[in-house]
Length: 237
Ligand code: CA
Image (cartoon, rainbow, N blue to C red; front, side, top):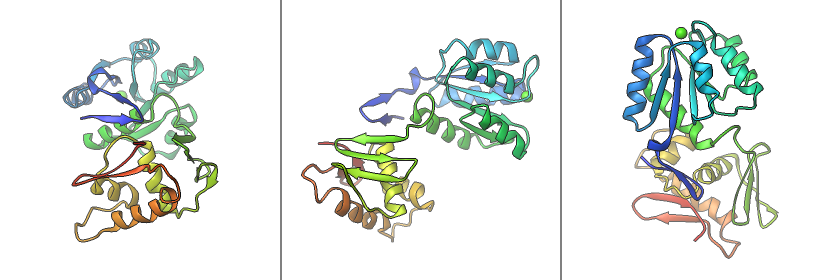
């Protein structure tokens, strides 16, 4: 597996995850699954140890159970954020209670999962949080003279506002978030249209063509590149 973010890329073997979970079976299941996915994983089974390890700042992400002996996940999360430790935190909550989710996000959790969960979903969330990098997702992304504002859903090139439809904006932000990485039509269809790719449709190619007409054709430097047989990548050539 290789994920790239702009010119930087990370190697999962160098990515350290901390799992704070007291239930033996769940902790072991997470340790095994995440290790097999190439991450370096440490497990803490008690709240105090979890807090001590989380505060070392040596982890790229913490998977944090809420109900723990000694000290609960809320208190660990609050202590981390008080000291401006911005390591991404994925909270594990035992029930789908709205107030738990709200409380977690208020305290500075980056995402949460309700138990029981599918490992594949947890892995997808972990990867997505790692791709965002430390702390909060940036509000703006840039490549060459193209800039997108993820909060205001605005894109500009050479200072000129691009008039994009919501789908075009979603497609462009996906390409920008993963710039330098070749994205297959399947991935693009899943992420932008939330659908499984049907080989009979050329919805992705049509959308890319429309987007290029607005954001590449009028400018000398082309940013969306076609990789034959593979898909598309956003990069400056
Ligand atoms: Ca627990």
